[in-house]
Image 1 (cartoon, rainbow, N blue to C red):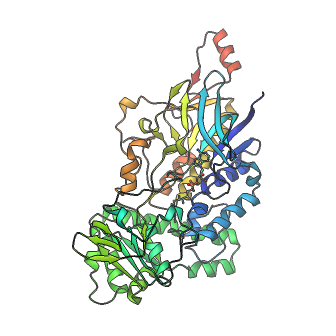
Image 2 (spheres, rainbow, N blue to C red):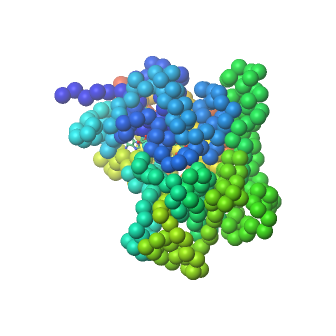
Amino acid sequence: MSIEHFDVVIIGAGLSGIGAGCRLRMRCPSKSYVIFEARKEIGGTWDLFRYPGVRSDSDMFTLGYPFRPWKDAKAIADGPAILKYVRETAREFGVDRHIRFQHRVISASWSSQDARWLLEAKAGENGETVRITCNFLYGCTGYYRYDHGYEPSFPGAENFRGRFVHPQHWPEDLDYAGKRVVVIGSGATAVTLVPAMAGTAAHVTMLQRSPSYILSLPSRDRLAGRLQRWLPARVAHGIMRWRNILISLGIYQLSRHRPNFMRRLFRDGAVKSLPQGYAVDTHFNPRYQPWDQRLCLIPDSDLYKAIRGGGASVSTGQIETFTEHGIRLESGEQLEADIVVSATGLQMLALGAVQLTVDGRAVEPGGAFIYKGVMLSNVPNFAFCVGYTNASWTLRADLSSTFVCRLLNHMDRHGYRTCQPECDPASLEAKPLLSLTSGYVLRGAASLPKQATEKPWIIRQNYILDMLTMKLSRMEDGILKFGKPLAAARGEAAGQVPAAYSADD
Ligand SMILES: Cc1cc2nc3c(=O)[nH]c(=O)nc-3n(C[C@H](O)[C@H](O)[C@H](O)COP(=O)(O)OP(=O)(O)OC[C@H]3O[C@@H](n4cnc5c(N)ncnc54)[C@H](O)[C@@H]3O)c2cc1C
């Protein structure tokens, strides 16, 4: 039976995979490609999460694609609006026609002899095995498990008689009107859920072990509204995008270099927005430095408003045990609950659990280094897409996709069939891929590829520097090694010039 072959296979039809398809169409129009998506729908994260109030915590001018303007002045968008934007982009660029839904890629095996990947996927409801080959594989699989969020084992959880919910699997039938709700967590999901449920529930308590940094921004951007009225959509989007890139870069750099100043700024914001005498230092003054963990953005001070209005409150402390009717803290405080939401985070997952092998050798992502934040050391014709943790995901995801296109075009121009960043892992000093100290990052660190202390193996959380590197740096840097077509290699062998891989051209 003949196996279908494509120039490129993209795994994943989330924000990144759809963006990658658009970039391929724009920059490598002659390449054949297909997107394998495990789920039945486009959108990844933005289709999976359905909890009340689900929204972005970065602005849509940078979370959106640079090539498709976000036309709404509401910069902090809700989940359905983001999903609609991703779906419309896929349709507009014809990327939706290239997606095979319900195709979960299980393994990808590289054969140097054929200079191809052989992929195996489980397709449809029955999990029928589908095989396909490609020249280049691009993983846009996100970074966490879809089937299971992270749930610590809570002492006495079995005693609780109410409903226990994880935001990753929000029950459609969950009626929380008039109910007492406890949301465990202090991250982006918790600070979104609490104000969203507060109007309807009898009361919502955000129960946190320790506080997070919170920054309130207007959900509607007045400048965007004006620019969108007067300028062509693309120009307005470009201006807003660059303004927000610079602002978020500024906040990050200040947080790293003037942490005490930023700590004061965040604290002052909380003091101004909360009732007089509120215990800001207990509930909103974290132990860690700004940007050691992801900053939580709230639109229009909605969390503070919910607290001021009395519909929500914050408890900071350790859980001693769940009881029949709620949770008892070590401090003795008792939180009565009909519903407990465990907004305790994600389980990190490398490369969508796809098992990679290179000529029969299994690739352990945790043992590999990441080249320019986009390729894996000693793995040929493979790239994967990771966004920023300190800025909008798409900023970096789009740089990855444009780099992949640049690489494919470079290979075509020079007649190369293969490319791989080469290194001796023992010669590099390994550092975790993500520099955050958040629980989910620390829990998953061992299974993720590593960065090193020297270029091009460093991950810089800096869009401007990354943009220069990804768009302008030399492809032939001596580390990214290219292989010539088999025919050319044979010709050279006949002429006694051994060159299976050639760094220069
Ligand atoms: C609740 C929530 C809110 C967030 N808010 C923001 C925000 O405001 N700003 C921001 O920058 N980031 C945010 N993020 C990070 C967010 O994940 C990214 O913004 C972005 O959605 C990631 O897109 P992606 O396509 O890379 O990954 P995903 O959205 O995770 O999509 C990956 C896709 O790949 C598919 N897939 C995975 N493995 C396989 C496989 N083996 N075979 C086939 N298909 C596979 C999945 O089914 C999925 O459709 C948020 C994350 C969460 C969970």
